[in-house]
Length: 202
Image (cartoon, rainbow, N blue to C red; front, top):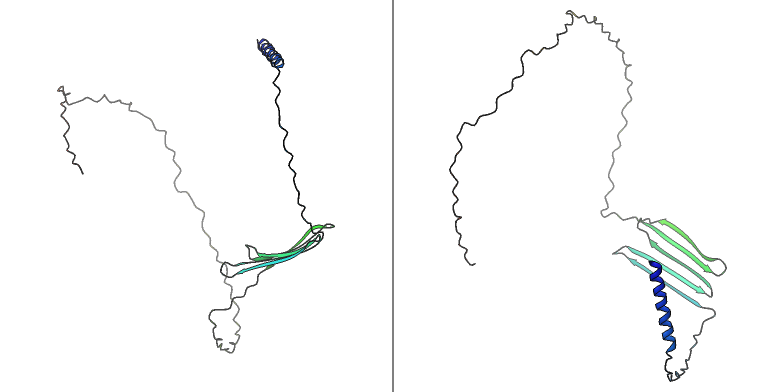
């Protein structure tokens, strides 16, 4: 069945292509597009670029302390930057870049040594030096004799008596079902109307 559908669609496609070929499009007169002359301005390229810059930040309020220095002479770039890492170390990176060796960087990490001045300077305390006490030799310790405890072995005065297995003599008694003592009321229940509530406008 699928082959029949594919074959029918192919025939329809060929028939449509044949009909489209027989109808020739009308010739259209196309106006030639105007040729625009584009002027290209060439930028001058410095064959030996040179620059040098630097910046530094030292903010005592936020604790931000960083800096960067870089210079270029032709194809050789040299620079250095430093910053304070979160763990309290100062990281300094010195780098160079040139066509022969590529980019090379050397990283140094140095701990920051910050010595805070004490808020209150205390006066030196006077220390009295006393003469050392004389050394007295103590008498040797006496060792007491070991304590020996002797006890008589335990004796069982009465023999062990084993009891006889338990015997059930009374039969199991089942109780009678419970009887209802009060009579069942046969009077129907009466329903009363629900109380009416008044709603006041607020």
